[in-house]
Image (cartoon, rainbow, N blue to C red; front, top):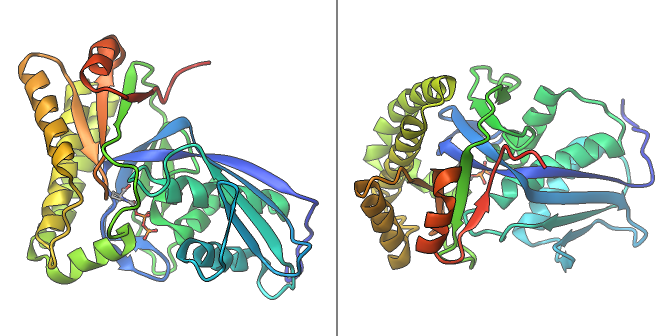
Length: 320
Ligand code: 2P0
């Protein structure tokens, strides 16, 4: 329909997610179609709350964590052009109000939860009643990793094959793993130097090593599915860590080099490796930023909180 019915206001929540097999590289920049399939776990209560309401000022307004953003700012621009996918040619100025309960732009995937929550809120605002896979396709067009944040638990974003991207969306993996903990090691919560979008483009354009990435990711995806089916924690952790390091190898091999690590990141990695040598099964993954995300089992939580000061622990499958 050209003219959609809309209500007073609508809101939605979507979780952030941490990829165990990473998305790095696009085969289509307009539709956000990935080079490889990825697999993540959603972070339960950590994510974005987004509210949409008609604007009384006569123009769009974008708020992030209570602050009004200038419409020419990068995130605000992305939000407005995303909203245009839904309202199309209608004259309907809106307020988009997003609150993250995670540090923004610190490699903790706030664009994933942000665009997923925005998609869910738009679906409600316009009473579209879209099915989950379609919501995931829309979220993907806002930000690739947002396709996975439509769901809780483990999610595979299948790369798909179609040129229109309708088969490139998240699929929930029905595995329940209550024992699994994710620990956020906050090395730095400042804005990162190079955003993921330009970082992955630079890698594709300049890193010869990137040629080996699609095969690495495909193999890791299979290993992760097997580890999920057998609930093999060490296989899950080892595969996730190896996948993250392989992605970072392609980043480092770009020109100019993309090194998202800080000295403290490497110190935390070495601590993880020492703990493993001492018999504690702990693994890490890292995204386009300096922070580590630890993977461990509940029984080791107290020990790891003592080793990593300020560790924020999330239990994706906790029943509360
Ligand atoms: C991931 N990252 O799988 C990977 C690992 C960062 C490193 O998805 O351009 O913000 O909006 O599609 O989704 C971050 O990339 O990029 C990301 P766009 P997005 O979690």
